[in-house]
Amino acid sequence: MRHFVSVADLTPEEIQKILDFSMTLKKERAEKGENKPILKGKALGMLFQKPSLRTRVSFEMAMVQLGGYAFYLSPSEVKLGQRESVADVARVLSRYVDVIMARVFAHEHILEMARYSRVPIINGLSDFNHPCQAIADFFTIMEKKGALKGLKLAFVGDGNNVATSLILTATKLGTDFSIATPPGYELPKSVVDQAREFAEHSGSDISITDDPHEAVRGADVIYTDVWASMGQEAESEKRRRVFPPYQVNEKLVGEAKSDAIVMHCLPAHRGQEITDGVADGPHSVLFDQAENRMHAQKGIIAWVLEKI
Ligand code: CP
Ligand code: NVA
Image 1: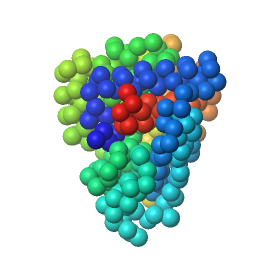
Image 2: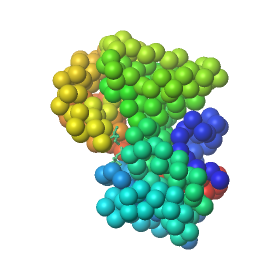
Image 3: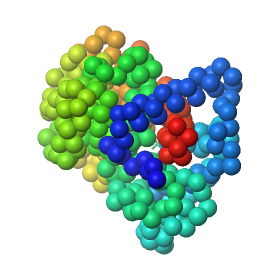
């Protein structure tokens, strides 16, 4: 069975297939006003332990536009692992639907669901990674830059779930990746080790620093995310004291290539990790990126359901 838990589990060819199919469906919808109902009769259950705007709505619309059906289960309804064990939730839900998307705190819960589910599990974000985001992001880079190999993506900020999926996808696909994080907020070593292995095959260059200026030099893409992720609210104040040198502002963007694009998975804390001037400025692709979540979800769902 094809679960979508981490981009690390997919071959570069499988990732490219998802990106290409998502692009085909985006074009089809733009030209014809609709997609073919390739998921007629299929249902997606969406289970959330954390809030969401983009992931929830883009998955729901992706299913609807492909002729399928999706429903939302809120954190308070299911109480994953509290009202009922994670394994039993997966066992039961997978008797009703064709595919499950879950957003959780502990990554282990995604792995556990994948072990007990009869249908594919899609990871809609865990404390460890955010693979659906990375697929949409590389879709956006491909769309804006026409290529992925040889481009340089610079991530500035926290070495978090989003950064984890970005480095793994970049090094699968041959994109150069630099990251600047404050000391103590680096990517997990195991992730960097895995990325280095992928880079040996793809030829990606990896650079890891605590200097945001060094990271963005020559970058085609600058990426940032919140300083405190969902679940880290108690650390917000402390992080707000540590991270200001890592703000993506006009000055920092001016140090990258003149045609660099700026990305952020959203939600953004404007005035913290990104200024209004950058988020709303000429380099920003933030809202195309958000739209592309929907196109990319179609590719991901089609892949797990073995339609591609
Ligand atoms: N980028 C993203 O996953 O957004 P949501 O948290 O709103 O789903
Ligand atoms: N790193 C952020 C991403 C939100 C889409 C978080 O986990 O809250």
